[in-house]
Image (cartoon, rainbow, N blue to C red; front, side, top):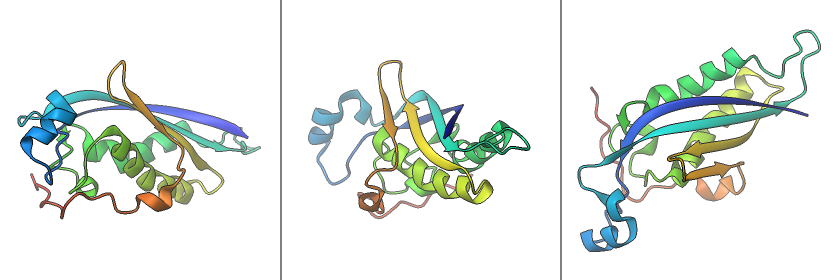
Length: 158
């Protein structure tokens, strides 16, 4: 088995805030991340896929194809967006890195499999800051089908 990694970046803002809690509860747990005026990050997403190289091309998947999938499914939807307000697949969900990476997995795994049937999504790493990152390998996905805190707000149409 050969593992291929592709790194993509995006900039986005968000706020960690549970609408079912008081302002004081949110500030106690999330601190400055609950700022009513949002805050932003320069995120890095590393996508790892696995498979056996095709004997004719020598590739598990063409890096350009993998980049196209990641950009179409994730980057174009989150880059320069407010994750709480602008991203349809995050509507009503806490935009923590943990929830983001699960939602990214749910979009990427089938898209990669469809475009390159012999290739499987293996691992995601989402870097929020130089000190904070999350990793996910698809475990327990059946428990993460509905991650909404509330009914989703209408996603802005710009």
